[in-house]
Length: 144
Image (tube, rainbow, N blue to C red):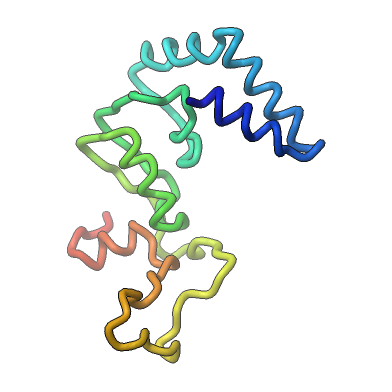
């Protein structure tokens, strides 16, 4: 599935995107990706960024504990990716709630925003400026 997605992307890729896609295809066909996947499963501790947990090399990997470093500075959707992907039974969120919030390219919805039309399936837009760290604290999980 990944190979066909990469090949399809290569057909429509810009000249700047082509080298990365070609390298990814070569890595798949060379067997290096499978070797990395075997190596990852051999280690008791795995370190990765939230986005890297989506890489094919981590397909099917399960961990006992997920540690989210700087959790008070990441958007909630980005923090959910490793939680859902790695299936940990325990979660440890590390962060300082007094630091800057996540950097977002769009403003959070304001109270002055127009309400959805009556009977509309569209509810208010989610506030992506709220972090998982904050949501847990508001839900009664005290920061230590």
